[in-house]
Image 1: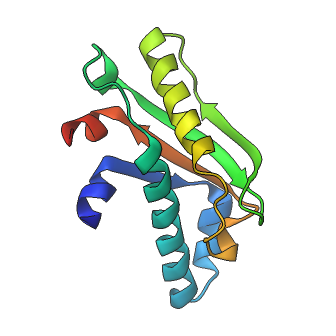
Image 2 (image 1 turned 60 degrees about the vertical axis):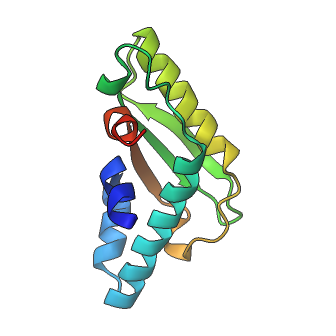
Image 3 (image 1 turned 90 degrees about the vertical axis):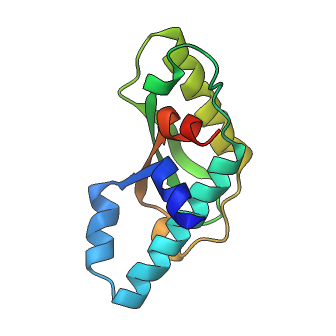
Length: 130
């Protein structure tokens, strides 16, 4: 269910998006939250870390990106605080591929376009449900 998906994904939004949420009505904020959940679920369906690989469960990748109103990337995705260990690089590449595979992201509220968003890909949580 939704609680399981939310445990699997840790979502953080940049200060720009958070500021926008605080300036909206409760209905608009709920719409943005639901839109962000749809975005995460779409990416999650495509992301399959290799849970059997040693060290994978220690990996937590954060991607930063901005979506244009056409649903395609206008910036990123960029790996925030990259590491050089091969297992981290492989998980990051799988997260980037999952993100790009899901394009375009056209069914989102307008408040999620043209603002930086960060999503954390937590392999430990994802693999706990495998």
